[in-house]
Image (cartoon, rainbow, N blue to C red; front, side, top):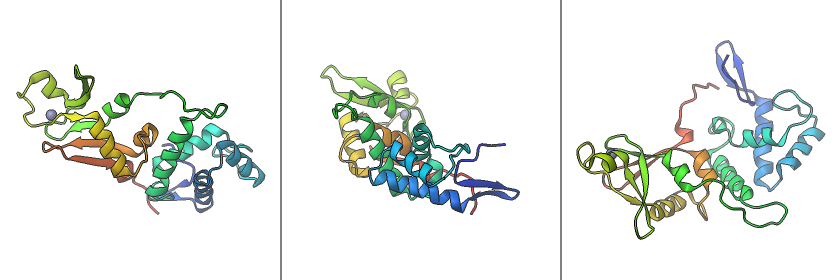
Amino acid sequence: MAYIPYGFVQKQDGIFVEPQQAEVVKEIFQRYLNGNSLGGIADFLFKQGILSSTGQERWTRPAISKLLSNSKYIGYIISFEDYFAVQVDKGNRSNIDEETNQRKATRYSSQNVLSGLLACAECGAHYRHITRPSGEVVWRCANKVEHGKKICKNAPSISEDALKNYLCTKLNMAEWNEESIKNSIERILIQSNGGLEIEYKHEMKYNLEY
Ligand SMILES: [Zn+2]
């Protein structure tokens, strides 16, 4: 049997939102957005006698963190706006060392995050990053890098700075945030005219019914 996330229930004729669990999911998102820590949310759930997703008396912090990044809730239990706001918040919090209150070193590079997401609209190949002698990082269609114009004729090169600025503006992020990009975006198609087509995770079909 397929894994059914907390908040949903499998019935004979399909998968449905489970109203009581859905309320708990909403409560967890709301509390996180209000600034509660994962531990604070776990304490709250324990005091309310709400069993964990695995039926334990106490929710663990990793379980709550995982729930907060589960894109299956989008559109069914949580709005995309709230989901996205939580991903931005998670990214910001994970960048701050709780003991020193200082910003931590970046945990993974933007190159890793972007390389799984960028694809060429013309030929379907992934985009690769290339560092120019000036130090500028640009992204180019892998087919164009390897075969010149033989397979892919018009795919543009895109500067990483421009790409990040565009995504920040488009997604209303104050600064570049790896985690929210990773958790919210499925794919970014780069058109021959330089335009970007963003596929968000909430546009995926889950085959769930109400
Ligand atoms: Zn291409």
